[in-house]
Amino acid sequence: MYNTASIDTVARALVDLLGFFSSPQRVDLLLKEAGVVLDRALVPLLVGIATRGTLSVAALADQVGRDSTTVSRQIAKLEQLGLIARSRRNGPANPDGHARSRGRGAGALGCGGAAALAGARARRLE
Image: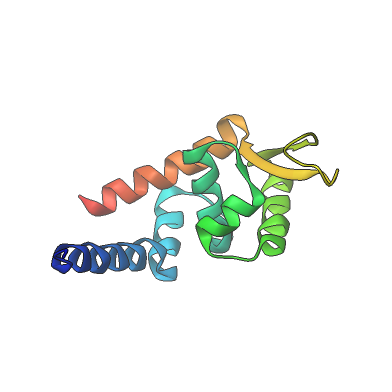
């Protein structure tokens, strides 16, 4: 028999943290403090790509809790803004032959925006 009290405590803490970091008002404050002009819906995608490197659309969609078609459109917007670059691949891991989009940081602009957001977040937590 396991003692689930500590698991419940960790679960509550995670819910609190997710609420803190994903609150629309907090995201708007972070964007303003960081000096980054970006639709708040794109922030979790940019941060996810910047911190985890290359991700499949499906993995990123799962990470942010959105439909993969929505994430694909949002990735296209980040690419249009010059914040990320996408690569396409076909091969054994992709037997149906369709190109799979994969996001990755695109140098100073995308990584700089994510770094500015991380800095603003750190200052707000001090």
